[in-house]
Amino acid sequence: MKKHLWAIGLSAMLFAFTAYLALDTFVLRRSYDSNAGTMNTAMFSDAEEDSSGAQSYDLDDRITGESTTGESSTSLAAHVSGADYADDHVSITMTEYYEYDTKIYVADVVLSSAQYLKTAFAEDTYGRNITATTSAIAADNDAVFAVNGDYYGAQEKGYVIRNGVVYRDTARGAEVLCIYADGTMEVVSDRDCTAQELADRGVWQAFSFGPGLIADGQIAVDENDEVGKAMASNPRTAIGVIDANHFVFVVSDGRTDESEGLSLYELAAFMQKLGVTTAYNLDGGGSSTMYFNGRVVNNPTTTGRIKERGVSDIVYIG
Image (cartoon, rainbow, N blue to C red):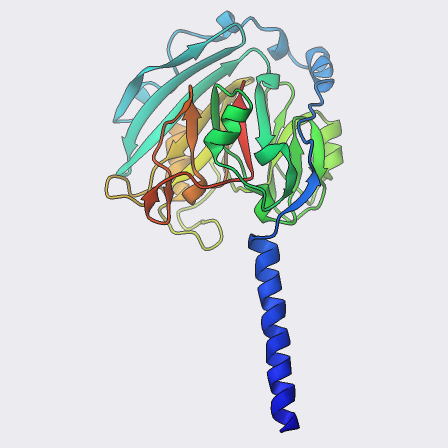
């Protein structure tokens, strides 16, 4: 009888521990910084002094009159009527493509300064399992344009630098996307530097999802690469750079009858045709969302339905 009691007690303890781990990982909210809207804009004065002039360009001088994401770059493309935006600091051109049996949405973004490429946390809070939809976070921050970020809140490791502030300095042996204050982008390994060292070098935003898709204009993944246990064809979100302060955001549909979704290699090949020199994969699947001028542009899929999923963070223009 005692043997049975020990077995029952041990099983109960094991079940409780497993349940706690599951709750801690996926459900329990932890707030580490409830006022996480700080921006370290001091680095932009340094960028103006140290850069080759990208910070001092007039926006009009940086727009050639023809979007890099025009019809010549891929076979099926359509400019989205009414989906343009321009002010003294920001120019956005939206184009919709149909490639690899998938709808792909591209935002060609030219900025006068990288300080207009910002990030925000759900509920303005850095923490664990704190989420909101991309559109809700965008609206809370008066964003003109936004895509989901790297869902940092689902991980305990991986560098998090947002708006020039270091929130997490724990490496996980991953490729890190660095967006510098001078408007350039680079993918580095977190084995080679700390998050604070990156911030000291002028990193304005850093993400730790990955992998890198394009390096020096060349595809950096092969046809068998995938993120964890993700399916080969997925909704995707990625960011690329053409030159300083000229960014390309790409979001694809997937998991629907109309859109199969993209593999990492297909995503990289598509972005290469857009002319980017560096590109990086952000969180995809149900997280993939593009927001522009108050509405969701793509068709986010969550549990088989067209519906936004809550995420930890966004990248936005505003």
